[in-house]
Image (cartoon, rainbow, N blue to C red; front, side):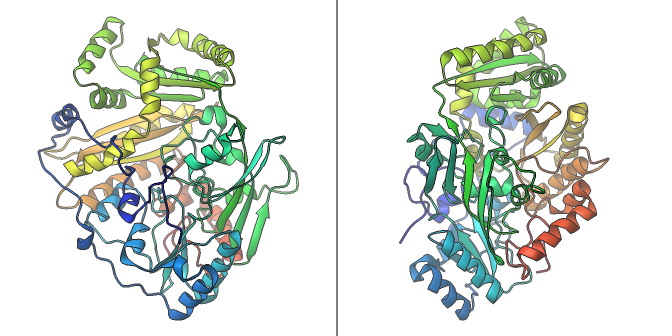
Length: 558
């Protein structure tokens, strides 16, 4: 029987799946100086809040009718329909702060009735048809990294729900080196995709923070955006074709690089979050693997100067592949968590250089040769020169590159300390970047501040466009022991209202998707008519409403 594994080949048991930290990972360790700094800034007191043992978690008995179970087993075999407590618990929810809290014994878990592991696209199609025939809810599951409730096993109006784990769809189907196209199955984990493509001298170049666990199908279903999006594009920019299982039959899209044959229905599938169908294969534009790269750190004085610098880089079309600007709060956090005693030395050096309100800017270029990288770097730095950035050299840039997955992993250590730590993101046009950042920050601070708690609300730009940019917020505050779930739910709602009001000011999600959490705010962005259009598509493709109940269009009645 096939067992899910991480990209190192280690078996992914249910406990590992419910943590950002891979088995044996070391980046989850929080140094003592970082803990002291957090206490001084937030009011965090010494406490230990370890994860609850699995035996303490409430997991009900599976409630899958025998007739449906036998029909599913006839498709995938008895060994690939899992109903044990641990197997179901391991595919319960995603990796948001609230998901992790629930797996630590706080709040109710939405545990599926079974886990089904199909072997190929044909089996996926038949499983979808069986679920539609028997009225069983179906939740597609890749890496389980959703932070917006996108893989919660909600039943909606259905009596039973299964998780469809795509881990066996892990193959590189074909490569067209002339057209630079590759067909990958939806369950391929991102590091494996890079390994498989590397054998052909190719790369996707798609490296979001969920890279270590997320899958090709998940990237497409959520309109993912990688850290090098300025160079490689967002994931939907890479998608040339899809193969999708729906209750109405299999749907294939994509026959040419461009078409005027009506609206591009591939874009309807992108971001559909498993509500319209289950992606089984994705045809992707690939590129030659970079032979050279250079990552550097800079500091600019103040958020406004930094944001204007990034805007000019984008509008002059000289962005580095990775262009990431941290605001003063995130810069302070980054220096404190990683630097220890070196932090004060850095601040003294920057003050001597006239930088009073430091904003860290990480720039990274990748290319076919050192000469290409050097040429692009010169163009970027020419445009940056007038903003008087202070270079910190390649040491800072390389440290960021090698440690860019440490943040999510450190959440486990922060949770152990009793910290509420979560992220959210949005995007807007350049003319409203400052307004939106201020509005979201104020909403989070006002909601989370208390007599003994001072929240840290940090922000960065990690995706820049000619017309605007994304804003990514990280929040840390001592956990409310009396109402830890409500503490974050209220803060997230306040932030979402700040985003969705007055226009709205920005999108409810730049790359985390809609899921459950953002569904109430979708009408403000696309209008009631837009919601009706999506609902009509849902009815046409999934007339029984079995696909990923409650996601994208909102939670159906339970």
